[in-house]
Image (tube, rainbow, N blue to C red; front, side, top):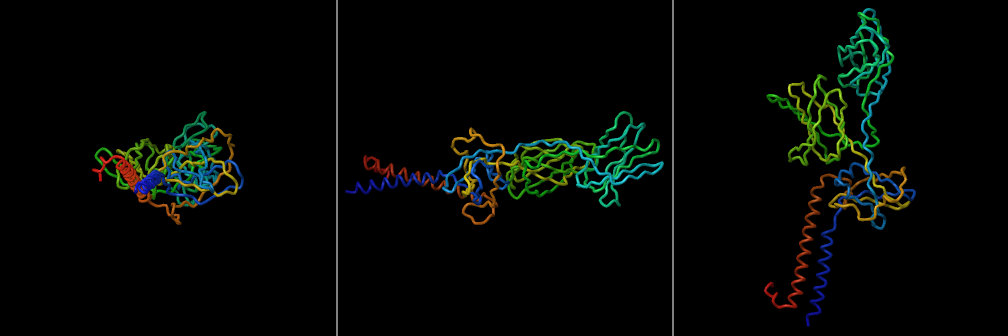
Length: 416
């Protein structure tokens, strides 16, 4: 009499439990972009800004493109090519020349582009004997500050000289004073500088970090801790920095350390050696974190301090075939672990030069604001929700099975 209704109930419970189980297994995205479209159909490069990249996992797998029908669009991930810095020689404009009989010759250059200068290049005519050179800088052409004194260069066949160890500066005026006591004035053809540059078009500028510095004096070593942190976690591929010290004759061992959160401990990332004459940058294999530290071993040397730190991130793109005038959007973040299981499009001939699309206005899913702060509570919520739904579905499946077995075999009465 009651078999048919109970059987119906079992079937409903079984499919309901499956539905809940699928919901529990579903992987949630935390963020989405505003809708964007393209003017012409074809392959496009969708540039991922740092706000998007910093919310992806290490393989950049937890991101999808959706079309107007909420269908996923195939894509491949591409990054800009990491570019090593190139050494470039830059000529400085000669602003003034003052020759003082029996004393010296002064050459004053103007640093019109406000470049950071820590060396000078001299191109001169052949000369005999030895010359002493003093270098100073000024912002107003009135008050001068010593950058390096008592450089000595010897004459002969050499006509190109690199003067290193200058105090790093961006003074508007640079003065080179060359003594003429025992030898005729030096005939200078050109004065310039050498600098390390990299193509910033391959990188996105990241926010400026907050920097604090502390020095601890030990018996055999003086250690300076330079802590720098960001408001949220960052993927960093390039770190530009400026160290300041009173001397250029020493080498410093520096450890770069990271930690996952404000309450954790710093962990070693990499070690490098720094001398004031070298270029001030680090190329990093996608370093990820929010809190970082330079641990500088000064030993008995003058204390090394940081004047500035600037991070950069490689540009990342999604290459996809998009239709004109159709609204697309990105969803990303959350617990996705794998790339889409679609046929790859790398076998298709994709043009080298593609139009770039810039999705903007990133927001949390379900939120009308653009506030992207602290995702921990949201991630915890989704994880707790999945755990609850998974447990509930498992209980329902067990109950359905037991009820069905009970109907067929009275031995299972003891379970209830």
